[in-house]
Length: 223
Image 1 (cartoon, rainbow, N blue to C red):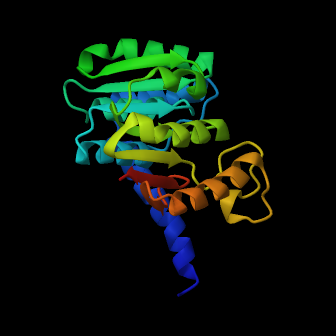
Image 2 (image 1 turned 30 degrees about the vertical axis):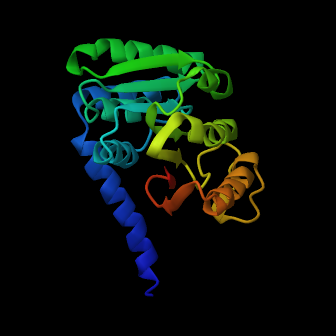
């Protein structure tokens, strides 16, 4: 492999992300700026686009977004879920859920998809939800969100449902030292994500793959 292939991969990532950003609606661009102004890192546009594309492919009607201030992802989903669809945003950050409430209030007439916003931890809220009532769960942010989503997925997802972990390479946490790809990074998130990847690949309940969208997406289909 030519050494400049690695440089080309980085340029390709920028190209794909910039293409996705250009395709975002005015509302999504506004939400992205408001997240930045509030001190949050908005989700990657290509990642949000891909998650919405997956939801469309499996004809998802109900999606859970757990942690990570996934407002951009939620906005993309409101354009692809069916008319009776529902997105549930669960986040421990009161600031993130207040911002999400304000943003979706301003665009509520643009989609018939219901957006439910909950300021709570996943381990306190997910047990309240109906079994086998969801098509996708997307977890982001703290390791606790990944752990809770993994432990709850079999009960909450319909068969064929998708469990997704964003930042699966662990680059975005503040104490990251290169994430999963650097064996010397022993931060809580990198350590847990290495264990989680092995667990998922050994777990007969899921068909799993890791792809290089955003900072890594772990895709896991409940069989």
